[in-house]
Image (cartoon, rainbow, N blue to C red; front, side, top):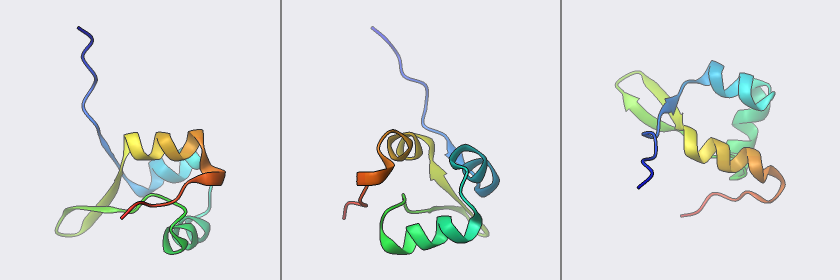
Length: 67
């Protein structure tokens, strides 16, 4: 039985490095629903699920945020 590593939360700078997007483009795509939504992980910090970001990287042209 294969065990999957736990899903990690990635912070903004890591997401920008992995995607190659600028901060403004990332937030513009987020508002348009074509980039994964942030998840609040603490009082003053947010992050993105690594699995969701990987899904976006595999198919970024057709990605839409589900409800």
